[in-house]
Length: 342
Image (cartoon, rainbow, N blue to C red; front, side, top):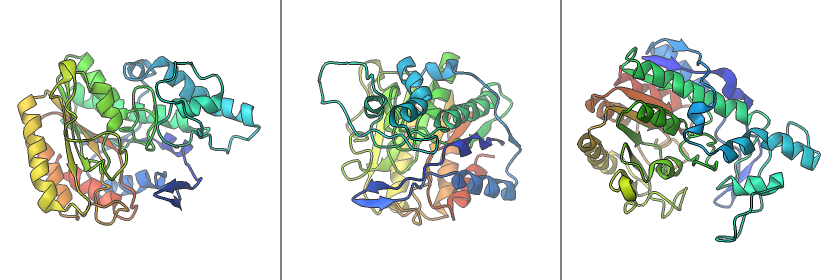
């Protein structure tokens, strides 16, 4: 298995605490996450690791709007100019538009931070560099599979991507890595299935493909009635227009263990089989673990089952890293999934 990674992700390292259910917490999405994963993969000797190639912004522009990309690239410099703060500062929005008010392109960077984000994640001096590198990591792994050099490849992408919508960032995500790869495959005429097993619903990925019939989005995640992202991921969201029935959500309750997760996973994989994709992308979050701060209760033995389920689809497969925040066990669980795909 090819493993693609880059140290460029270190340019994005949020440190400012933020509110989560009324408590201030330190940012859990930090560079050490990828270090722990790569250490575990090397120990397991799962495959060769390589640096990404540069793909430029053309494949990114196939997914994200030009206005959003221009804002994200320039936001931190504009923030420093507007506030007088230095490059170590973290730019975050605190003003958002009233719903349904007439559209006005944001002029002030603080207005833009509120307009182009759907939570309070910061933009740092290195965020753009890290996010575009994560897209290159993903596209390099995608290309290895798309050209037939590899049956399966793993993108150690950071920042993650599945909460990033076409024109907004959130949930530690700035560019939607899995969606960028899916669009690249679709541009080559492939039918693509995205299987998202992160604890949180991939609301950005869903938004990007909601009216499409060439990309299936299937997600198992915590019930948004009580968990982030709250506004999307319900079972009755099935796509619209040409994309009707090409979105399938499997929201699950707090405390979910394999007895609950397993049947839902089987049902999700059956949806993928009926779609008959040419290729599969896995948005791999392992924040479903018992040891993670979130509320599912999957244990070490469950992650090979997730990998075996993907392997049973018997399609060329790209695995893209999403969440997982307990750094003691993240590498173990990612490795357990990937072992089943080698």
